Length: 103
Image (cartoon, rainbow, N blue to C red; front, side, top):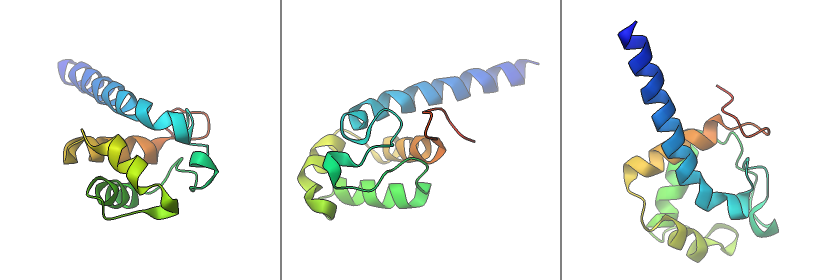
């Protein structure tokens, strides 16, 4: 029973942290990742976790300028480390159009 409770609290804490990380993204991508950022990007809701990690890391390192949004994305990702990027990518991959984790 203790293991189940610990797992639940850990899962909720990770979700809360990931949700907090996503708040910076919501301004352009929408509350549920359903918006095309500045009318230019693809919708990110449910995007593959590995693709998100790859793209977010490339944006952070100044190696990607997809849709001409590279500078904006790089600024948004400056403070994130690789663990944060993985958590954010996982959160995005689990989003559905209703904004709740789909998995």
